Length: 200
Image: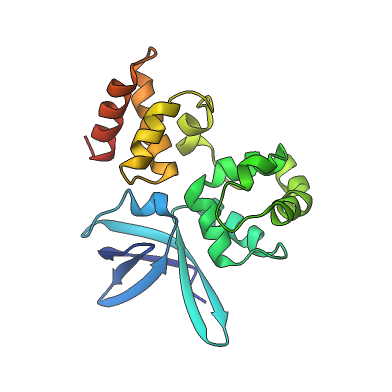
């Protein structure tokens, strides 16, 4: 079983990337937040999990061991497959998912495509107690996102989404933009977020 890969990003696709490991290209499905950060030629270490089915063999990659563990925990819930688990991680990020499960936030979980009320309830029922005592993920990298007021930056967030950015990357960029302090006008928030998304 492949548990970790260290290599160079060779190609970035819609939901996947190809990681060149000593001349062999591994095709990995990864959360969209990761795709937004990487670029061809970048050195990368990914924690991986192989999903084997009768007619398919898929490889999934994650930036942290905690994110991978959360993915595996979600796969253990009835009705949650790899596609739904990746969709959750792509939409909200690991720390937000744990928080939503512990706080029984059905509204948040059901915003993810393919996650209906019944599946969200199963996630909460089966994972809530596991996450109460011990978080699988570190909140350090997602502090700015978790601390965002849900209504704060709403206009700027909608603008970024309309421009084609994903929910997680847009929120993260706005969180960093807000570090400069003050309640900035929407236009200024968008400008600062765009600079962040462009790597500035």
